Length: 149
Image 1: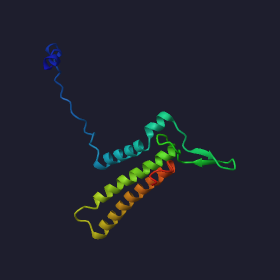
Image 2: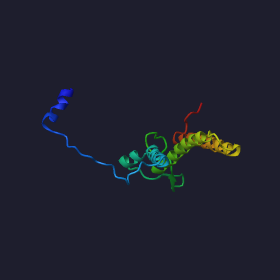
Image 3: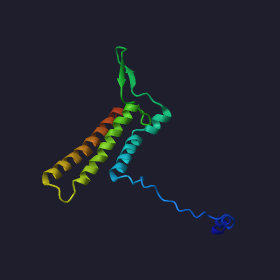
Image 4: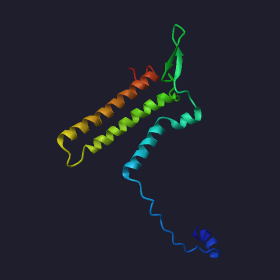
């Protein structure tokens, strides 16, 4: 296989270039990379790709018993479908839960005062627990009989 790749280089010769990287190009900081990953996680878990392909409305509507239109944020009985606001709300909860784990990791620093450690632990657990139970509430709104015994 290597002989196959070397055939063009028997005729061609690579130029002897001495290229330097421009001095104004710097590696991004760790927080910039983390922020870009977090924003992309938010958009992907919110269903941005689904929203671009299917083009659902931002919110739906339903008719009540009096004939009036009421806005609905969740597309009921459709696990594979969503409104745009539904995707953004669930994506916010997924991101908040992930940030809770990051906060728990940051609370493990060496020289952290006891009060700051306690506050970070409290906030991390609140983010994780709140996002978990709110996602369960969202699923019950979407599928009313979900996880019922």
